[in-house]
Image (cartoon, rainbow, N blue to C red; front, side, top):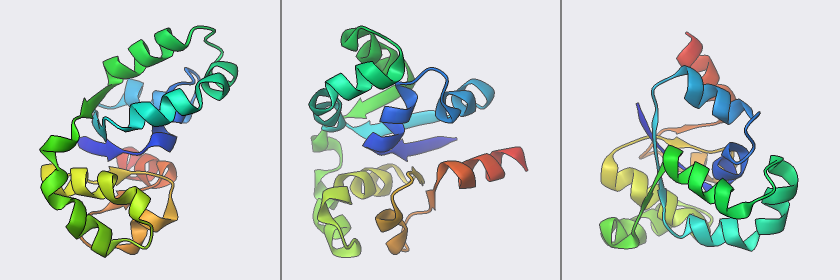
Length: 133
């Protein structure tokens, strides 16, 4: 299974004991995210280090890069305008555009992403229910 993930899922993955990491260790899932999500990670660097239990931010990024493919905007930029039109919050457009480009569902706990009908969106709970069934 391949999924696009938003920054909040990346934040969860940065914590080794998270449910998100349990899911990845139990199931074969390939994750994609826009490369600008790295900017978000750097923006919240101190929070990530504090919450992850990993005292080295570079190690967190290295770990995430083993779990997630960071896709350059060039790959999905042709779908950004379509994504903006489908969403109430344009800041989520890159995640939707990426999902549209690769025809994959999105893993996100952001309710805004569920307000469109082109791509399926799974919360962590939804994903657990799907995978455990």
